Amino acid sequence: MSDHNSRETLVRAASRLFRQKGYSGVGLTEILKEAGLPKGSLYYHFPGGKAELADAATRWAAAWLEGLLNRTFGAATRFEGGALATCEAIATAVASESHVPACPVLSILQAAPVEPALQATAQEVYGRWTDCLEAHAVRLGHPDPRAAAFVLHIKLQGAWVIAFAQQSNAPFAALAEDLRRSV
Image 1 (tube, one colour):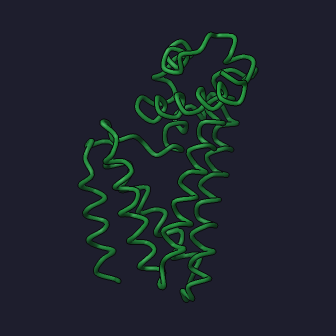
Image 2: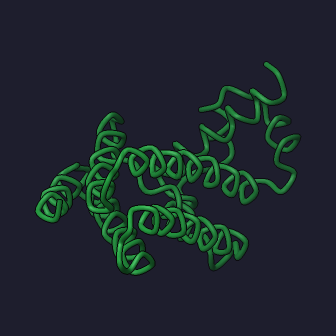
């Protein structure tokens, strides 16, 4: 396996496990077992250990979600339609997994008191998502793009937290129904 593939395998395995069990609920041995890689691979790619790997895993999953935002809003003609399409796309993505995963950022936030760099990563990623939504709101002519972006981000995040807690897609369905009324 190439160095790039080993790194990518570690990042994906860590993201999946952190989103299932949280940062503190996953050890390096479990990540390595899930990735099928030796311990040396971890420290070769992530000399900063678990926190550095968590940062990379969060950023990888965050980029996936930002791509999803751009795809769903890219096809929209109104902000409300993009919001609904985004909610439905996230619901479909999390429903395709056997276990509803936590939001990629939520999975590292619990570690913030002992890993301040992860707090900074969370703030950066959340900011990028809101900025992405705001850019689409501006493009689609929303009268208050920043507020619309921030409120949608709050709604999506709330639905995701409750979906994770309930292990159910029902919160996304309820949010989609609410968004559908505004389309």
